[in-house]
Amino acid sequence: ASSKASGFASSPFVAWADPLLAMAAAASEASDSPAFTVAFQGEKGAYSEAATFELLGRNAVRPVPYPSFDEAFQALSTHSVDLLMVPIENSLGGTIHANCDLQLQHSLFIIAEHDFRVRHCLMALPGTKKADLTKIISHPQALAQCDSYIRNLGVVKEAAYDTAGSAKLIADGKLVGVAAICSEIAARHYGLEILDEGIEDDDGNFTRFLLLRNAPVRIPLGIKCKTSIVFSLENQAGALFKALSVFALRDIDLAKIESRPCKPDVMDRLERLFWGMSGNMLSSNRQFNVRVSAGPAHKKQRTDNEIVKPTYRYLFYVDFFAPADEPNAANALKHLQEITSFFRILGSYPRGGTLAGLDNLGTKVVVPASRTLVKPKRKVGIIGFGTFGQFLAKKMVSEFDVFAASRDDYSTIAGELGVSWCRSLDELMQQRLDVLLISVSILSFEGMVRRVTSAINNVGLSDHSMLVVDVCSVKVHAKNTMLALLPAACDILCTHPMFGPQSGKHGWGGLPFVFERVRLLDAPRCEEFLRWWSEQGCRMVDMSSEVHDECAAGSQFVTHFTGRVLSRLDLRTGPINTKGFDSLLQLVDNTCKDSFDLFFALYKFNPNSAQQLQCLEAAMGDLCKELRDGMK
Image (tube, rainbow, N blue to C red):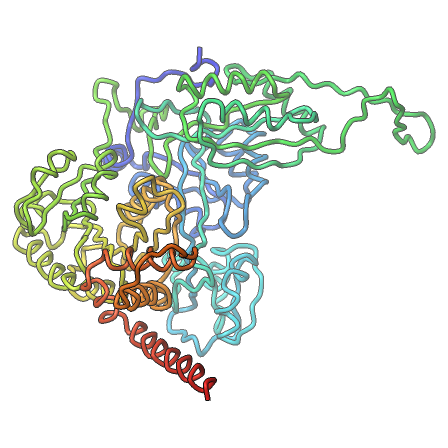
């Protein structure tokens, strides 16, 4: 009953991203056309095309550009293409409501999502130098997102119809002294030279893309899913509260809720359209009684007995973390249907860029049910299996295949946690890890990175792609060490989980996780790993290593320094303690639990700490002098 209510037809075909794309690539080599044709809005080289390649790979797809979103949606609706990639929301600009409306009008289904990091590049005709530029052109939104950079260059900016279209204008017109702001692939498409990249003012610029299809997908059991729905309510007190309660009562986690006005005549057309569609959960029980007075102006007159048609009706868009045909979620949706005037499932799909159920594409890609593929878990290695390494492993074993190695023998503890123990770094490297997490002290870090590099070379895997992650409290030292010593095939992610076994023993919700993407050849793998931390509830802080160390010197080092100074005073609790004094005693206890080596490393490997120490000494001297001068 739940699958019928959800509008999902059963399917004997299920496929996962990497195996599917491998098969699609093989199919494309055996035929003249790639496996999938994917519509997008814009010129070749648009960010939508870059997002398509990032999600689906380059060998298995042929992106097809369309001048407008209307035409792109129409192409999928008429089966001129297999799929459609559209942006739906931006972390800076918000929701793209036009695409929400078009999805409803065309009755398409979300089958995947992808968070695309927008990185703006500056490009011009080959041989152009930045000093030669007199004008920069791009879409108004891109110009706004690079405003500080443009002002520093001191050139004129001019709005164009499209980001990639700007590159096309320069290439077609041979515009000398003019640069465009657009994606990296636009430069390749139009033969332009990239003068600078990553020029956006805010590096937290992400666009969420949706992959759409004419039919929904069925998701294999056990896969983490998200479901998107849209509904409308009667304008009654408590109506929205009741609607959201169907999820709260069943402990279903909501990812997003957003309201949007919709003209009544548009809503009426949507209701009639969806009422006539089979297999969709949809109710339409709202009626309006409107009395229009006679007279030349034909104005509506309201009386106490009339129900006046509102100027707007509101649509509510909700995303929640569960598949639509899971019994608990299906009951919630059935309940919601009973109290809404309009309802539709927009799609139930895997979270975070995973692909599943890409079937019904004719003879292009077919995976028989008897050969259903299961996505293998990522392999994560942990070097340094002390208290913090074990603390991380306890969480990670449910999501990853975890391997560990350490100076001391923790094989028994590893076995109890479900972690595969490796007796040496060479043995750990032989596991062909996806992610390597180095959890050693700051003082030991450089030596350990050298040993890791040696182990990689020993087992002949210098070309193996692996994401290497540190968890050091000092970031610039870790960043520079990894850049200098690790093989070029290794991606690098600097992180600082600002919590541990004590502060995180009741969960990681709201606790800060600082990170910097340093070097990435496989960006989706890095984003998947970061997404895991976010799903644990961490407050994700995207911060450069340099800024981190500057901030840490003013907070972390000062905290440790203050605690250790107070510990030298041998302070003791007494019968008249104030709350402030109790806080100081707690500070002493917390800081002295950490080793002096950690405190020393915070000073040795962060130049900002040396400056902070000078300021502390000066402040102490000034304050002592002020007190003594007051006694004169």
